[in-house]
View 1 (spheres, protein in one colour):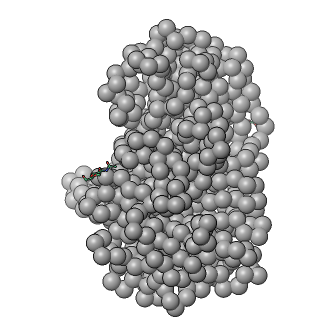
View 2: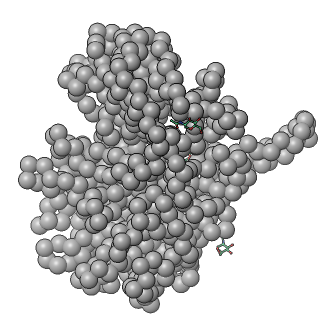
View 3: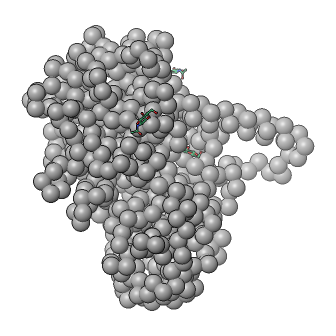
Length: 562
Ligand SMILES: *[C@@H]1O[C@H](CO)[C@@H](O)[C@H](O)[C@H]1NC(C)=O
Ligand SMILES: *[C@@H]1O[C@H](CO)[C@@H](O)[C@H](O)[C@H]1NC(C)=O
Ligand SMILES: *[C@@H]1O[C@H](CO)[C@@H](O)[C@H](O)[C@H]1NC(C)=O
Ligand SMILES: *[C@H]1O[C@@H](CO)[C@H](O)[C@@H](O)[C@@H]1NC(C)=O
């Protein structure tokens, strides 16, 4: 949830309207062209979105009695964010095809009358789900509430009851009552007490405030937060979960949505159950600027849940539009979810998160297109033929036979990979790379989204930069078209190769580099989509030859997301 930034985007929409109306007096447009954004071509085919209107944060995902439940922040009255948000609700048997149900939570009681904001689900013993969510009360304080299913025999869990004893947690002395939200899934300690965390900020330091309860109704604040970092600003949508075992120790993931930058970051460590605190693996856990991002593109307010059916941890994340509020009003919808991803601990050294689309997504793949042993000399541009669609899944492995021409890395670049992507770009001036894919590309390449790698020689080994450059993604200038990027934590010299998987879905380009070590999601609106054909190309504009050992690509079917 990101109220003030959303409000300010509403404001810029107003300014846009004013500007537009005054300029109309001087130069009336020659014809009444419809807004191109209203085209259904920009709606997604296999990424989750409601049939219409606004969506933001994923809420309370869970697996219950054979069904996956997905809730989301939703404005049921329009395509813009408003304070009095409700919870949309859909169910699925496979995380791909969804059935929409009625709203699960709507503002209705004094403790949530101004909005039902984000929250999480916990499955209590006896297979009883409970939701804890943030309500905006009559004076817009952020308080935490519980809701229980009205009828446990209904597998769809259509109706939810809010007990009269709500709220269960209210803002405490010393914090801003409007910066205290997004309760996590609860977990039970060895002492039998339930625990959950809520995000806040105190004197500029982001904190995950810990609460304990014996009955899920009465909650007591712990003296110390589970974790905090100096100077990070407000923490939203905190997620604290076991990720996997490494050398007999359970590694925990702490994910925070950093409200100042509107980016999701994470750090890994262990859980000291005696002191009830998170202990970072190294000093970087205490410096939020060192935390890797979950996704280096347009993703925010993400959340995981444990899938008991397949014993895996699944992640959901919101991807907002890169157009304007005026465009959203015209097209009548805004916001999608990234493809659900499986979260695992890197099995090579236990040091990082690995993300990969749920295997169920592969059920949408159609006939396979394969290319093998293709040499990409400098300047090569090779089309992936048979993939002239806006719905595709492309997996490619690049082999790097030589590192001789690698550019020298300047250590100052480490802090700002997007800047490096912007300055170096996709189309030349390389050594080892730039190489990668141009997707949603026009014949003439005047529109394309470039997803690529560049390899640099640093003092200690090589650095791999992964970028998704949206700057040429659309001819429309008024769109948000950043170059996004992050480093890929791999030993590229030892591996001698690197993989890239890119999911293309109309207005989404979601890319997994180095087997899911670095992920970038972009929202793009190519005007050529409205004319039909789009292409996928593999390219290499570095001086060193790169080889595609194998490329597999599929057209993707449409998922049913009603
Ligand atoms: C809040 O929601 C109600 C019901 O959906 C709607 O009628 C009303 O206009 C909304 N108010 C605001 C301030 O958005
Ligand atoms: C955070 O800041 C406080 C006060 O400036 C300081 O005492 C403390 O050591 C800092 N903590 C970390 C983890 O940097
Ligand atoms: C993928 O879809 C496009 C457009 O419908 C079609 O032209 C192409 O033949 C399909 N490719 C394969 C491999 O089926
Ligand atoms: C998504 O939209 C872009 C372009 O308007 C903004 O720059 C981002 O801040 C915004 N992200 C969120 C989480 O609202």
